[in-house]
Image (cartoon, rainbow, N blue to C red):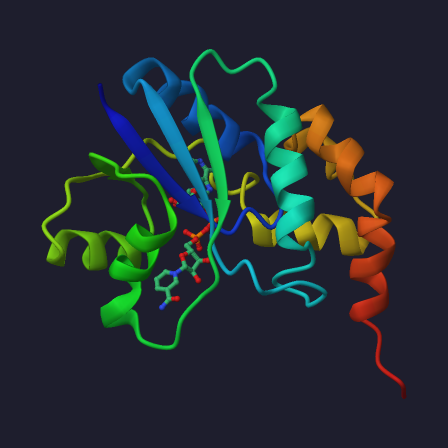
Length: 169
Ligand code: NAD
């Protein structure tokens, strides 16, 4: 029985994340999806709450063939203790899947096997590029699973992002 951990901020959950998870579902028996920076919302890099991200992910993966555990993880101020913090919050796991250099480094230092899944269309499939499309009135929906886009629309996510990008000048 192999249980994997995939960590991300998912601001928002997009087709690159979905493609990675579809691949992992073929590789592991159970998958934990850790939603990082869970305490963050309503700012330009983190527009969506942890709960909204749980919904995006759960609905986009409703046909997953393996058990998924979707667990919000608040950041802590000490990187050196973060792996212990994560381990205290999620079920035991055998391997971590990430391409984030800091996350790789921290888990490797803790002696936990790390694998980096392939990147899919990194230029368009990035949270930064998709949030910018939302701000510019571009077609952001084609980069996001339909069910996740519906969650964003249901919470007025684009309007929220545009509002918090304004100034009072
Ligand atoms: P992210 O949502 O940007 O990315 C999640 C994963 O998807 C990453 O592995 C990324 O490389 C991958 N990815 C992105 N685009 C892709 C694409 N097009 N195709 C395939 N894969 C793609 O999230 P992140 O920034 O990696 O999340 C790390 C989280 O860990 C953050 O919330 C961070 O705050 C947290 N963290 C916290 C601490 C602490 O609290 N001290 C320390 C380290 C990390």
